[in-house]
Image (cartoon, rainbow, N blue to C red; front, side, top):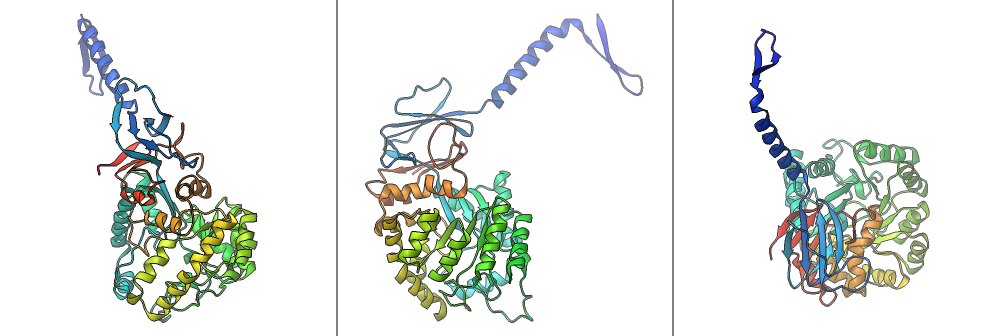
Length: 448
């Protein structure tokens, strides 16, 4: 018996035999089962000799972490392995939450030739620079940094890179971006003093503002075009030619307007600060973090502690500038040496005072992918290895507003997990030897 099932517009029909129904049903069931299996997320069991979970000050041993899809399903010492799970035994290693760097610039990188870098910054097309940015993002992820906060970029390269990573087009860390840093005319964020007839002056769209109203406009522009946070520049900087290092470059009214506007829109504010006077302006305004902080005095650090403001010290950047001082113009080299001469005592005082310290490197000043060298610098200046590790995991997650999602290895969190050889509490430099990287349950690196 044949059954007609449909007619097209020309009157032709399709038909099948009733006798064929059992076979069709069987094939359909097989296909459905295959689709269901494909939709079922993979289960991975990670085993290692130790684990630092980002919460305590010690390692647990041994360590077993069950990952299902993009989430951590269970954590323990002797978990049962589910049927069909993929087991990865990493041996004499320590599992840690994916590292977080709260101060990077993934869209650029300094070389050993400052003058060539200056020329290329003028001549490269944004599309070309975007390829470099993707390369730097991959290097950062391979180094074990699964999340970063990108605090300043031109040409919306940071927004494009973040979106491409989120879409799975580019391998890289989870990114929070600030678009343009906000500063004053002639200040650290306003670029080099190229004659104005050769380069149009910048305005609020590019983050340059004068007066509280323009500063509010600048904040709104950055948010309109994709900013997850706001970066402002109340202080002079090292790697700029025309402004003094310690000078306050924005008024109290301007910085307060930036912070108030950003907070109204649900965005946190990171303030680039070297000088102490500018630091006190930023603290009064209510910023969420102070970046660098080279010349902050003990009483200013005490104000930071009282208000719960984070310090992001970027020790690696200063170390890099001093080591390569001969490549810079004299004005920059001099400022870099002055900042590093002050920053060590500032950092020790911050640790002693109990200021909340978040991990950040200012990578781009140093080459991308060596971010973990910051750990040894922090420990060398008096921070305990456990505190340094927490600054780059649970501490940074809290600063970024992502503590419910990342920063610790515990059930329900995103499966951002890395592995390093040995025990980082015994040798903090082991953090520079990441050999396993998982982000959101996907393995990006697995090999020493």
